Length: 387
Image (cartoon, rainbow, N blue to C red; front, side, top):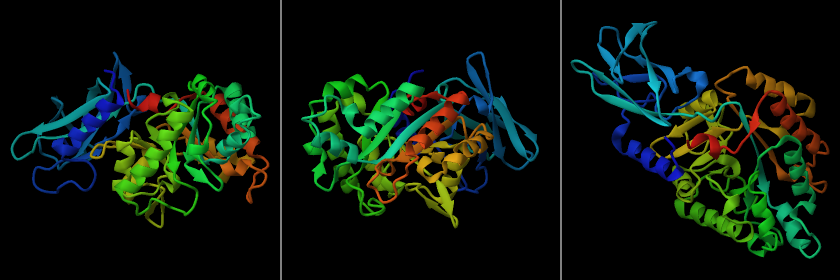
């Protein structure tokens, strides 16, 4: 079944309205309540979570329930083994309801999980904190025949031409002496003609202050986001837009993330790390859910209709001679590395930046080479998680 983003939001919203009654440790401990040990509500499963046979994904559902109960999972009898009830069931669609039934005091319970058929062995390359290259194109619009005469965007085209990389650029609305309303639309046809490998999306109003949306309300995030989207449409076209973004600093209240979702961004990328037990660059997720995203690299909050995707490597934070080694380490975990997410920030490209990295080009090329050499194919995340 093909599911578009509108269907995705509608279906996950239905889950949030009451379909889901069990999942993480927040579920009830009352008599008859069942704890899903795996998968949990919102998990996005791949071929590495089971066996693909006859066009279906057969995966094992595990339930943390005391022995002595009679349970069925989607009509299949669950067996007690190694301290949990287990049943292997087929997932036949993109969106799958897993329902538990039983005798006596057992409550009928269900979760929703997803089967990502087009997800494994793909990689994405995104760039954060972007605005300076657009300012340069604006300043030189009377001279540049092509947007790729800008050194930064020209380099990204070189990356694409060399490795077929699809490139996702998260942009600010403004910087000193320039905002997106100044940007010429003379190159709109050229932007459009490269939309098969190039994306532009909202990142923030501007670079400073740090963590600008940490305590922001719905309206502030929505207004900033819509300003950027409006200008992208004007100077580049709808073809450059999509449903995925990374918010500046990846920190926001759930209200802010709802604003992003309502603006069309219902997949968010971030670091999803824990520092001293506290989530960082994890949007509104608590420690338990942040850790779950880290372990699986992707998870859907069915209540909010938002997909959370982990960025595996921040290239500008990695010494050139360690990039391949770090990615080799990530690859050891098949679940975690099914889809590799690579990211770098724009400012380190520019020689006049205080923390300029002269090996910026070499770092990017090293990461793309590793992905290619290890069998990963370039992709936009949206092409892999909504169907």
